Length: 277
Image (cartoon, rainbow, N blue to C red; front, side, top):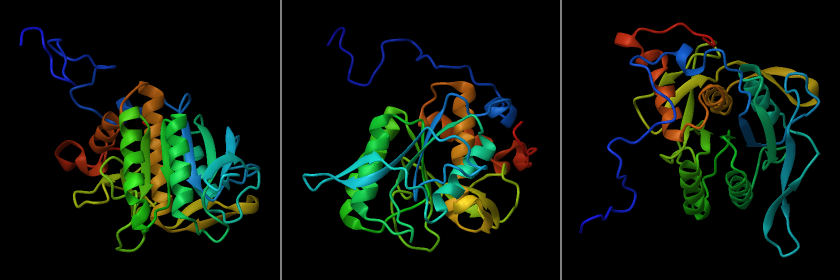
């Protein structure tokens, strides 16, 4: 049919990209000189200790509430963080991407438990708000919310919101880290907060600093903690730096940059220098 173009196609000879990529991408080009300014990061967790010196200013604090009609929604919440888990994640992101704007949504209790409906509502809200990066250092094994979480993860991907999710600490099936539309993160044993690896054995795609991590904790304290929960915000921070430097990249672009800058994907497998640049 003359003049007809199938859906999702383009009539141009070559689709344009938002920036010109170099022939050999390295960390300096990917995020060198960036501090996260202009990037909005949402942390779905146990809340945040907004007075913690290692967290700094928070753009907004929210929590899951039961609405008058019995459904689950999101509202302002200034109750802080009774567990410390969300504070730890916020502190990690702040340390690596100090200019990023952080928002907290409390979905976990002080005992680090939570309902699948709460996670669904919080993720739906964060996706609708259009955050650049959404950090999920949590997961659920509840099959009844799996399909809805997958829909939200796919929606985020196509809208340009990057979901970074920690792998479960045990070899069990849970969500959303096992979805292909998110960046899934497990831990490596090294102490370098800037070091990340690409994992060639899915479902966890990347490995970041998650063993004996020096983290901020509730009540203005600090401690050392181990878990994939603390590896994920390292990758969220790197994603924030990339987006801060390069603007309107898609989740696909960011994931490609994280892959190409991984220590085990350098030229001939050589480990590149660590650090911000």
